[in-house]
Length: 171
Image (cartoon, rainbow, N blue to C red; front, side):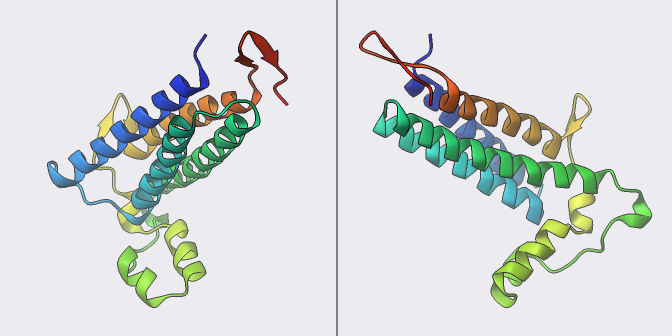
């Protein structure tokens, strides 16, 4: 049986790998991220940061569930952003939102909530499909990854914990 520490290590390694791929696409392949891509990266970073904290802390019982809850919640939020991105990419050409100002400009000049609303509405640059593999775009693969990360994280919340041979109640 996998320990909670090994599950959080797996989640952390997956997040580091995903961020590494994102940097490769941006630096080597020249694929500039749109605002929704950046928000997905933030979601991956948040899940990875929680997993790293859990890995270092190595909690038992309730502490393990808290880390699993936060990592799972961040993964669900990231998955929702990925789903929104996929939806925008699959809109008919005449319904794609127009390109707006860049994320940096919006964060500098708009109130935070207005900037977030504008980014989550999407823009024309978010509808571009720059890379596919096995029929899925980058946001599609990111959604798959977020689902797996959420399942692993929430498994930490609901699974039985073993400590010194004793079974601990999951709730």
